[in-house]
Length: 308
Ligand SMILES: NC(=O)c1ccc[n+]([C@@H]2O[C@H](COP(=O)([O-])OP(=O)(O)OC[C@H]3O[C@@H](n4cnc5c(N)ncnc54)[C@H](OP(=O)(O)O)[C@@H]3O)[C@@H](O)[C@H]2O)c1
Image (cartoon, rainbow, N blue to C red; front, top):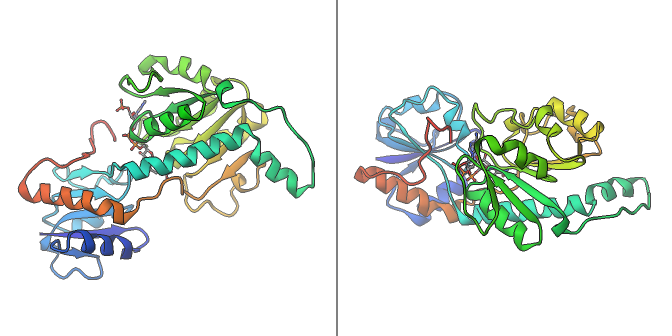
């Protein structure tokens, strides 16, 4: 029994070192070092090329290296009986919280506008709201969304959340199922922290933007597939949206010719809101590997039926 590391960028060093340090008894291979593929029972993966898993005939479980498992769910070459799991981690949530709080504060204090004005040596002030004057709607009020919500609330923002099931978190108003329009109508800043699947693909589109308050601000830290990209700039230009901070894109890295790079209302970051830290996460992966070895249920299982 052994773990195989699989990644789109073949950058295995950090995970390899972290697992060797945390659980030296577990044999860990990469596609370059594995000799006997039948020894592999567990894959730890990030966007492995489609079909890569089929090379390991005794594979029982695959864990994503991150919180998102969309890269596993969209690979229909993975056999149904293989268990899928993902990372759930407080550090990941803390990092996401800091990123989203920064983006919300930058939005209400016009930092992106000032950055653009500096290039033109343009001295112009704006009337700005205080956090308590602003309602932030978190679309995808799960592990990361709830942590983000608590941090925003501590910093004075009014927070509301939308998820499949109703939540009871620090008195934050929780919306579900057919309450989406009411949720959107209050969301002056909308944060997307949904998982990506066929139900949430392109959910951030012109129709949704038209249901937000005028001059709302969008922060997409979910996945690029959530945003119907061609609808964003028209929504900013017609006043539906004041602007957007985007951390994730349909194609990453964002192509050189993409209009998001140069539109003054769009602030682009390179998928960096919350990055998995292998050293902090290796024990979680080792525990799931041990559970698989003992025939126990894995932690943080991803449901193919639910799509996350
Ligand atoms: N940009 C980055 O650096 C970065 C880093 C990490 C993660 N992410 C993204 O963040 C996502 C969320 O991670 P997480 O750990 O918070 O996931 P999670 O715990 O599974 O939370 C997902 C939330 O979305 C809700 N949801 C799912 N499908 C829905 C739908 N169709 N309509 C309404 N609500 C729906 C869920 O509702 P229930 O609670 O009722 O099930 C849950 O509250 C990941 O999937 C990943 O794409 C991005």
